[in-house]
Amino acid sequence: MANLKEVRIRIASVNTTQQITKAMKLVAASKLKRAQDRIQQMRPYSEKLNEILSNIMSNMEGGTSLSFNKQRPINKVLVVLITSDKGLAGGFNSNLIKTARKVVYETYAEQAKKGGVTMLSVGKKGLDFFKKDKELKFINDHVSLMATLSFESAQKVSEFLMSSFAAEQYDVIELVYAKFVNAATQRFMIERFLPVAPSADKKVSKTKADYIFEPAQEELLEELVPKILNTQFFKALADTNASEHGARMVAMDSATNNAQELIRQLKIQYNRERQAAITKEILEIVGGAAALEEKG
Image (cartoon, rainbow, N blue to C red):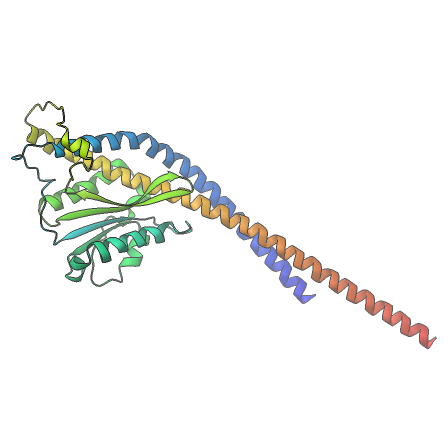
């Protein structure tokens, strides 16, 4: 009977866990709806701005130079890794960390060995993983940005990135984030933030952009480019935020289903052992009765 008690306790424990995972799934689904609406409304605007910017950069006159499109020898690299603050989201954070490791230890391996790679972590999970690496430098001022995500707070970080690049503190700034596709799918992206690259589309590059600049092209772009980059950075944050909630919802749904299956198996085990105990007691009673009849 002691074994039956242990099984009952385990069933109750798994049932409690299932209730927790079910509640977390509902919370994640609620947050996902808001985050998904935000990124879906913002993405077309952001992508069009980025397309216009790349087109303009591809067709700039040879003598025109901006502080945000200067190509320099790559000695100092800043990697902006955007992860979540919390876990329980399946392989979401581990995939982002894996992507960031590829950037640091493969793409910029030479710079990393010389101490030329700095990591700016947005989200605690990325910082917790990379802080043990003595070859990297860290900027930890914006770790909690995702907790109070807004365009204003994102703009402050984006402006810091732009000012750091313009001051030649870094030659390249890379973003590592998760692009939201749907609740079950995320794409883990490596995106060049600065310097602003010309369009990779050969057709766009060869076609002269039909823009009329007023005031002068350089003056206008110095004002316009930061606004586009602010939007681009916020989009990366919003994408990752929606991806996190989607990954957590799927993970909690899977955990809830697994708990249900485990409860089913435990109940089968409990019923078998209970039936075995009852059968044993009946056999003992029958055996006792038979013994008494023989003595009588």
